[in-house]
Length: 170
Image (cartoon, rainbow, N blue to C red; front, side, top):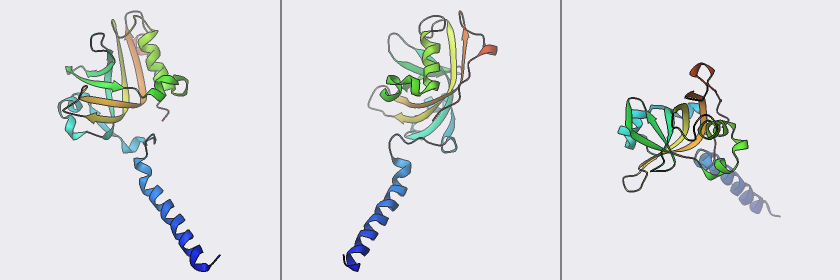
């Protein structure tokens, strides 16, 4: 093999590695370190969604299941009419055993007290990528990556002092 050919191959490999390093933060499924997420108030997120579009965020909110609309929604006490859809990726839904933070949320919704969120309050810090679109429904959505500080209170559930807390595993 000639010296010239080795130099071209070496250059190509180096360029490929450099491009992967640059693309790392943009690869799908990449766990985002907590310090790269912006802490956001749920009411601020709901009223100014364009400021947070496509950003990694953490938001403290109540989760609600809504029979008529379907799915899970995030809401705040100060802005109960402003809903943000909680979008759980299929990989997490299909394998909750690999995501104990989501499994704890699912248990709180399905197995503690009433089915869903009727008669109980489920609050947590949710992290993930926020998306906003004027043209599609739901307009505001958080693509779930993690759940922290899960608390369940209400009829037939643990009281807030005995709340379940689960650290994020991502």
